[in-house]
Image 1 (cartoon, one colour):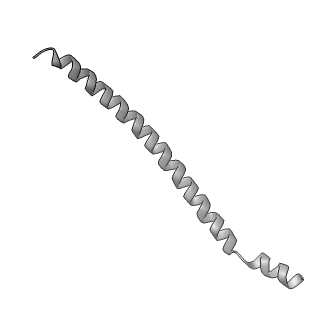
Image 2 (tube, helix red, strand yellow; image 1 turned 30 degrees about the vertical axis):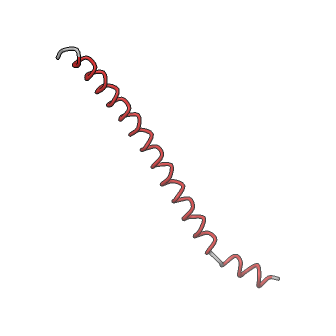
Length: 60
């Protein structure tokens, strides 16, 4: 039983999988945050553009 427990303590393959999972989770959070910010900025940009085009329409 001690040999099995000692072998399990030396096995680090599970730790590597957990590390990769954490890295993937952090990258996902960063991408979601960036996409949210970019989406908000694009929404503001297109709203302003729409407003300007609406006011310019009456000038022609």
